[in-house]
Image (tube, rainbow, N blue to C red; front, side, top):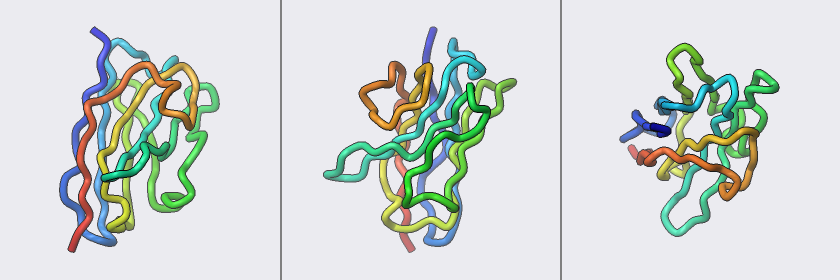
Length: 123
């Protein structure tokens, strides 16, 4: 069964950190790329970043998260991670992982999606 199962997130403090995990079943990470998206209340879903298996590195980071967020993956565990640091209240959103053969900034390009996980940054 092909699925992406997310975990992590929750409540974070400004300046703090959180880690989101995305376990991919039936989607070998050496073939499939994992993109991370977020959607705040009343906002469009936006691409946070994507790890490219072909490049062997992260292909893209949203400008507002550069230097604060890091995407990584563990192929042996079939798991991708979004490490969120120096959190800001504007990072509050529902975060999604998505899989596709290639990295794209458009959410419409992705075939498979995680269930989403809420991140709320507040003091």
